[in-house]
Length: 639
Image 1: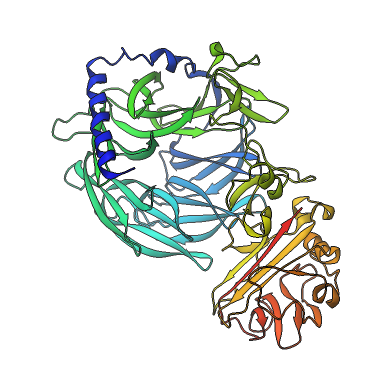
Image 2: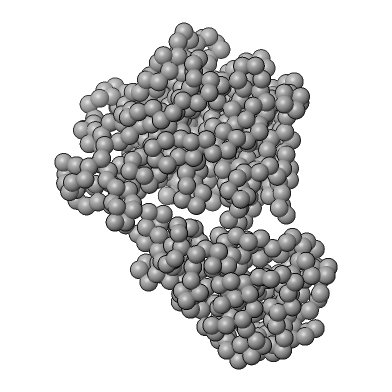
């Protein structure tokens, strides 16, 4: 959107805000909004022990859904376990207890197909470190999360995960360490662990978020208290290409949370203001800011009472924002509000009364309902409440527009758009999505020829559940699923990892039988590698069944002749291999697949992903017999 046009549209939208404030309930869209159905309480799922549980994190692993309730303290101590619950659509069951120390926030994320949890810990008495307690990184192994790294933080209050290009970061909002003037920390994933990347000055930081506008990358930190006043600026930082630089200051009042969302091509930031020190009141508006192409400017005030959280979400093809009103100065028995984003203006859609709300938590799942949780800090045992929208099993008509149904044949949640049942995102059913996994990358390419390279949902015959896979949709007609991706940095030699890679720059591989896929499903394999040692490139494909069987079970089924005479070279191939193959399978493990030294011309040209052989060997049509060169190895499969 051109800058002048964008700024003109912002002016028009701000006029709409003023008009709506003058007559907030005369909008012609009110009936339309209500067609989607009021969000209503259905029932309480469960009660959890009476502790101060500030936040929760929801995530899905291999088709199962989980809620991690992050436990801060239980009145007597901070060193208590946080709890991961499994959820089957009807009830929460305790799945795992995680030892934590004053934990206050958690974030689930994935790196190269591996699952992780980052836990922000605010105050530790289990370790007797107080506000100097470290925060944690956990990794999913054998269907449990295990501690793998401690990260120095100072009274951490919030954690965010984000990617910039091919780099992975986590950021902690540090709130206190003998002073509220304490640096927040950004960590970068390097060689299998997080390393401190940047320290950012902050003042009683309560929340940190990352967001992107076109090619611009931002983080925003909500400041709650300077040590002297609650009325202090929060800060927006812009990625310079090397680090985050201060971009803009926003006036806030004991800001407890910051949220970003996009609607009608506009990007917004919302700050949840909790307390105005000048007026000594919790009855203070929270503010919505809009991006005008150059900076963020004030757009709309939202009436709030001790606001602690904003949560943006989509339902019935509309965007909503929920605000958590926690305290009005005398009571927590107050209403919180869900707003409908009409074009770009936030309009009250429904009031929901739940005492002492701290956080809203959205969890959209493919059970027979859409769930919307709130996490409450109450005087008695807090509860997780379920909220449900109406369902129907009848035809889609103008009268049932906005209602939902569970389509059993496709195992998918659908919404009525007045004409037909479509996916809950409001768009037509598309193969390769979470609600409609494809049989393969090739099927996606055949049915959606316009698709680009990227991650899609697939479930080949025999696989017990759908999974995300990287699909190359451009090379040799497209439809290739990535099986092996090893981007090696010269001088390092990390062992191979068995996990399906979801990026061509990843560092892992997977066997077909580990995913429940039959050997007969695979019809072609494609091999690609480069090295900084020379300019030759290996790039060929093969339909040889002996080679394909190795992709299935990781064992040796081929001979040298299968490589030297039964492959097809693809554009860009300039290497000696595989035509000159004289030997195969120099391996030390029983099922290495195409890692280790798979095929080679003895002591001259090798394909090797062998970090445990000798000093470590990463070879592509050469034989340096060391790990000192940058290499890329990729293998794709097509049915």
